[in-house]
Length: 122
Ligand SMILES: *[C@@H]1O[C@H](CO)[C@@H](O)[C@H](O)[C@H]1NC(C)=O
Ligand SMILES: *[C@@H]1O[C@H](CO)[C@@H](O)[C@H](O)[C@H]1NC(C)=O
Ligand SMILES: *[C@@H]1O[C@H](CO)[C@@H](O)[C@H](O)[C@H]1NC(C)=O
Ligand SMILES: *[C@@H]1O[C@H](CO)[C@@H](O)[C@H](O)[C@H]1NC(C)=O
Image 1 (cartoon, rainbow, N blue to C red):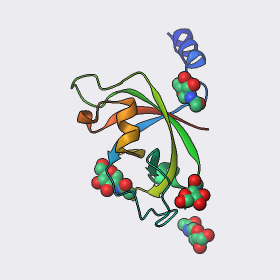
Image 2: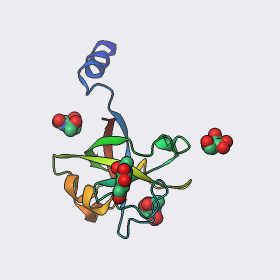
Image 3: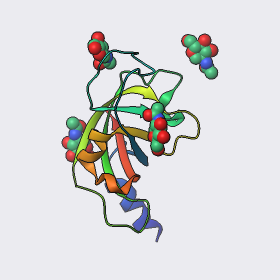
Image 4: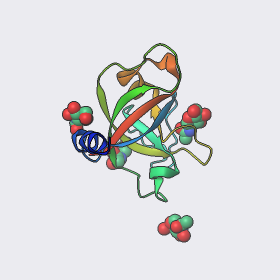
């Protein structure tokens, strides 16, 4: 049993953290990091798990869908998306990363509302 668990650890994606993602809709400005500057739609708001007192501003994350958070229709599209952190999702945030609607839709069916994710800083 131990050997099997170790083998799974070694073969899983290196350095990918696991969490959850929700999404939010436009308008995307003003953002906590950049005010009224338009940084496009491939953006996200960071929860305290990665916000780091603004140090996450301007960092990019490669996010992929890891599955459903409930027993609904499987939401993943089998793709990944790179987003830039431009905003803060305050305490009580429902996910690790709050993606833009466009970014969420790129990796999963938005009807799911919330998904499991794997994310890596890039
Ligand atoms: C967050 O950063 C600001 C500005 O650099 C600093 O004044 C403040 O003390 C920091 N807060 C925490 C909780 O580290
Ligand atoms: C956000 O957009 C502004 C221009 O609207 C740009 O000056 C700034 O560098 C962008 N920030 C990032 C982190 O992309
Ligand atoms: C993002 O992660 C996925 C899955 O781990 C990988 O296939 C893809 O090449 C990565 N993309 C970038 C731009 O790093
Ligand atoms: C993040 O997502 C939640 C929905 O889960 C939303 O209510 C909230 O306004 C969003 N916050 C930010 C900063 O985008």
